[in-house]
Image 1 (cartoon, rainbow, N blue to C red):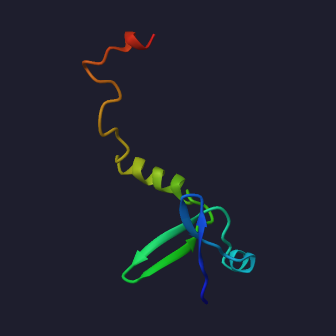
Image 2 (cartoon, rainbow, N blue to C red):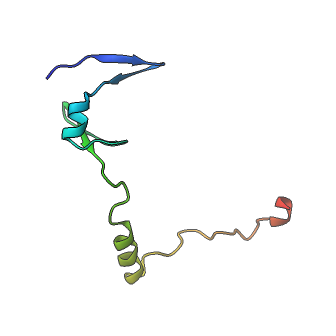
Length: 81
């Protein structure tokens, strides 16, 4: 299939037909995969799918600790009041 690149504001884009969007269940977002000489568009059905399970696993592995303190020693919180 061949399609044209179209101007969208200051950018350019690719217009996909309603048939293609429905066939591949493309809603609001796609994942763009860059491979050698190809650009692959992959439908994203639920961007945060399985996050809850992964967070539980991180907690069980004790891998859910802050990497840096949320308040620094030299931080002056009074200036925000």
